Length: 270
Image (cartoon, rainbow, N blue to C red; front, side):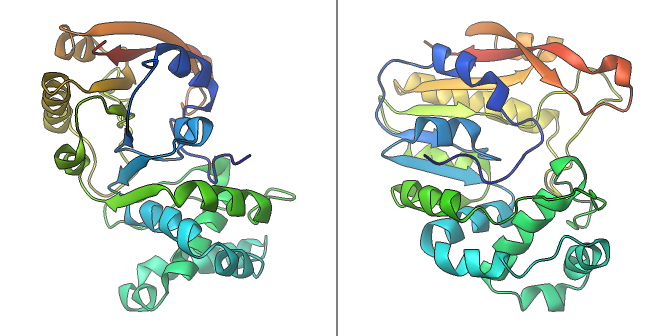
């Protein structure tokens, strides 16, 4: 049994039951263009899938797990849960010449290590694409789960992995396929924007472009399910589809009183 390798901001582990309940009963190929931590993907374990993400470190991670699990495990075993070592590893992307010398296995190993030992399991980059999460000071973080990596490798062997814009899936989708979208959410207010997953950000124009892709999917007879915030803009953008409200616990808020159960939406075209 495999489970998500990394923790991811906005991850869907707590909403798995709702998402499975709202999925189509039957479909052909599974697509997830904002794979992130892949909570739903690893829960469903699809036999034929296409996953994508704009973050190159993330897609390199999944490709490495699929193609070189043993070598990845060996590299992970070399890391140390020490503050000085953590900041040395984090700083590798500050010098592009140094970072470019890392092979794919070393990059994937670093990515898992930083995710598991960084504060709150958060992955965030600045405008230069550099990880800027502080050391988490956890007593015994598990950054080398060899059994899970091997299990995930077997699942990913049937998965096509792409690094690029979410629209790259368009030419691959056919009638009867199913697409799950989990994009960066529309902010509930002007001060709550959180688009630091990549150096690209995700603005209103990209949300509109995503809706246009959903129109295409609906037109060709495929299925889509999309998660987003309960912002008014989302309701307006997807007014022609079915909008389901679900409750999720979100802890990433500087104001403790605003943490807890909030309403999110799941949009479907079926």
